Figure 1 (spheres, helix red, strand yellow):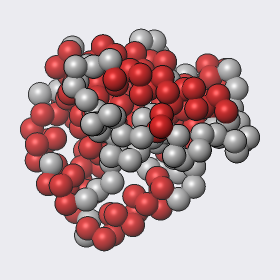
Figure 2 (figure 1 turned 180 degrees about the vertical axis):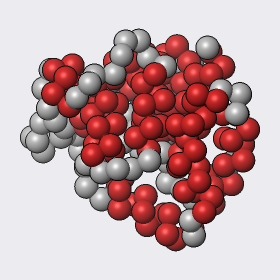
Figure 3 (figure 1 turned 60 degrees about the vertical axis):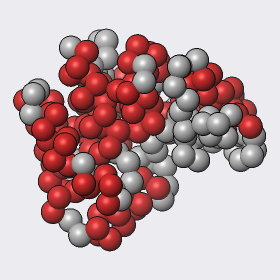
Figure 4 (figure 1 turned 135 degrees about the vertical axis):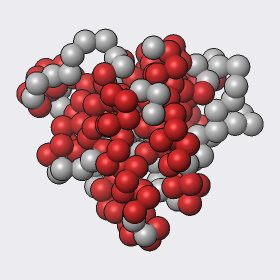
Length: 206
């Protein structure tokens, strides 16, 4: 199960990242790794096909439209539970603390530390137990993102399902059940951390 989780998390991290030339070039590697686990492999087929068959500018514009412009498919886990509130600053600090406790320094590449591809890559390559605990803690965020992707018929929804399958318990049957799991919906108070708060700076070299 451990190897399966690592393969799923790493492939998911890459599939949910901005599709630059390096990411697209990893498609054969992802296919080879996922081939060991046919059940999981099926959840990635549509996105991998999209990466392989699309023109670079086309797939990049698609990604920006669906994941960067607006919050319908936000890839930052704490957004779904804490929105732009003061509490979110504390939550982001918790992610950074988890990374700092690892033997390997984590470079956030300028992203907030709750960025899902980063959490997945951390779980796959650095500390599976700690990374999985973060994913489990934000299971409601993963499920809300999954339903958002399903609603808009994006193939990435199946990748979220593959991630959730590795976590304890069954996925909620509907969005109302997810909201109950979360305890509340995404708040809208726009008073989060200042963008230059040291808790948001890259870990590497710190």
